[in-house]
Length: 452
Image 1 (cartoon, rainbow, N blue to C red):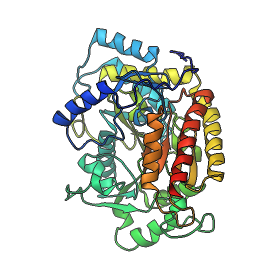
Image 2 (image 1 turned 30 degrees about the vertical axis):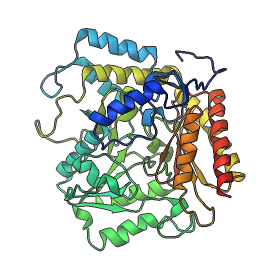
Image 3 (image 1 turned 45 degrees about the vertical axis):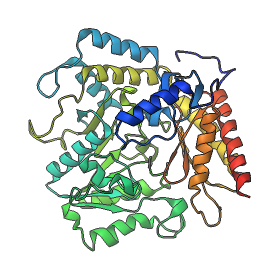
């Protein structure tokens, strides 16, 4: 890995955040930036290095969120060099209307690693995850001639109108924007710790799949009118929720029974975050359509929707994007994939991820406010509760742990209502992870003590 940094003096808090330079920029931001943005805390970034975030007051934080799972490999020289080489050639020439090799080379690479159904695969490029979802919605309806789409409660697929109509993570993301895109239906996600049916796995026999057939497809949405089921293999914004063993196998059989397309949203879980290229691979499932973005180009805007040639049958002009597949973003994405392969980062994610999961499970055993620890690789959720028996969400408690950990040098964020989101870069070392865990553990104990 490049940009090796001594871990001896990390994290490093020189000026208690937010420092004077940060506060000045925040004051300016308040006057001109849309209020619709949500900031977890007043971190004003100046530089990103391998596993480290530096703010404008020169504080150095251990990165435990990867810029919302976008900076999976930080800012390695190889990716920066690839960007510079492309910038010296040309910045844009619209893949919608012309050709260039950078997009073709990246698409060829993606079709080799993306596990969608079909021998011949094709790629549609966009600018973001939401746009990739919009493309998947349009393709599913176009290919099947069916109107309905099913998504899941707790899901997050984006904030554009089609993507927002599938999203069901927080009411504020939909409040005030209706009417939404019609013919979209949400069903419960397999959130075993908080089962909406008040059942327990495995005795439940995965009733949450049966519910779709017995109560949705048999009561009011004709299965022959359902184009696709859109699902995150691991819920991201919903709380880093992992489905139980057997769930995806049963869901895939249901989609095959009724000719419904299985649409896999890997926007947050993909690109190695869970220890495999794509999270759905943990269940050996091949979706019909997959969407990617976030970490695909290491921070440059790029999304992708991949499907087999048999599914991607839409005609020329039916869907496109002026900036989708930008050559600079494509160069960055190709360098990102090559970097992950060259440095065997999937192995690192599995090894260090197992250690992180083990440590948090150990902390859970001696904690009265950790309700659940779940995950694989670098997509781990630590759910904070007020009481383990009632499972009442520990919203303020989780926020306090997050804020105090940040002030002490760990850039961690939350997901769902009260889950600590453990999502470091794929380059994270065990040594640095342990330093971050010690700080988080200390703040869990302090928060717990303050409740007694």
